[in-house]
Amino acid sequence: MKRSAKFMVFGSIAVMAVIAAGFILWRGGSLDEPSVQVWVTLPDQTKLLQREDDADWTDRPAASDMVIQVDANKSYQQMDGFGAAMTDSSAWLIANKLDDAKRDDLMNKLFDFERGIGISYLRLPMGATDFSLSSYTYDDMPPGQKDPELKHFSIEHDKAYMIPMLQKAKQVNPALKIMGSPWSPPAWMKSTGSLLKGSLNEDAYEPYARYFVKFIQAYFAEGLPIDAVTPQNEPHYEPEGYPGMRMEAYEQGLFIKSYLGPAFSKANLDTKIVIWDHNWDEPDYPFKILGDPEVAPYIAGSAFHGYAGDVANQQMLHRAFPEKDIYFTESSGGEWAPDFAGNLKWDMQNLIIGSTRYWARTVLKWNLALDEKNGPKNGGCPNCRGFVKIDQKGGEVSFNSEYYAFGHASKFVKPGAFRIESNSFEGEGIQDVAFRNPDGSIVLIAFNPDESKRTFQVRHRERAFEYTLAAGAAATFVWEDKER
Image 1 (tube, one colour):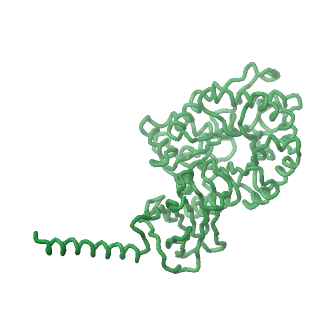
Image 2 (tube, one colour):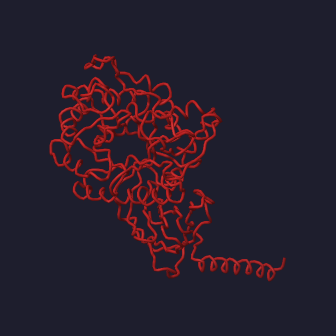
Image 3 (spheres, helix red, strand yellow):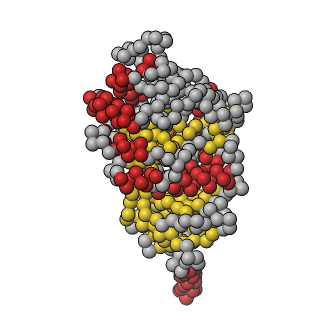
């Protein structure tokens, strides 16, 4: 080829490259800037945590006055994870009603970040709840007999299917953490002599503290460290038909400062103690305990449920005790709320966005899995719903709205991430929360509560992208922080 012809060919290639680069820049992208990954869930279920076309960075002025400014230099609480409770019913169903292939597939879809939604935090009932195959604790005795030395303490019940399923979950996601919460101490420790109702007897405070120590040590021996415990699930509720116990604030405070805290110290346990573990509507309970200077050093934080009150009460408690963490530990979907769009909206606004913007480092639902009859049940809630439904007869697995709502966070916000600054709009504006992962990637979770689609711009450092989100839709955006 002649030199002039070569020049024309290479010159044409160079011109085309310049034009292509110019086109990319005109669109707002960059040759060395990865685009923004996008996942979307629509209220009509036509898209369920679906990967969409990437959004490109742009330097164009915002087409909307709705601009979300993300500031990765300003961080808040560190995240432990998102998840649900591995109840006795959930573990039994997964272990016994699925064949090996279906069980492996479900565990991947629940706990794997790539193949599923990457659940990284589980709540573990310490004994029976309203979702168990029977009523039990780790030290049950015949009526009239006691075991103050805890000679009969055993987690043998959990070894049948609970521990194997937790171990399998941790194999899929090694970052998985576990919180233990009792619904009732052994009956012989209580004023009623029963797992139902009652309060903790004065002479049971010391053995009950050792009961917690033995539980943590026994689970550690199974390769399952317990990240945190709460002294009592829902201490201001005494259910009629399943295990429970009332524990007033002064009782919980006394138990922690004089027995549980010292017992943990003596046993060299680093398991956190988290108080309250009940609804948003009574923040005065943790206020009273945290205000006691003898109790506070033993306490890591306070846990909330979402059945009554307002999520903003988490903010109020944080402002009073900023050195103590906030956990959100329970809320259940159910057949009383069959509308997918409404469930997605409630979970996104109150839990995924609301609870984390108000300092929660965990966000957990109730049952991980239930069957086609919303069980197995042990009294209590007749129509609660799990993340997934497992049909006992055919072993078919289906996924409920909670799976997709929580997946918008759990799949992308990794354990150890920090919530970072972002402005969120009230009313019908886009609501959002942002995080910075340990690898430096940025995650923005957004929800559109409006009845019409909304276009907005997201700005981070000197870059921006635009997106139009359908009415009632949720989206997760992930991008690399080029200045990390």
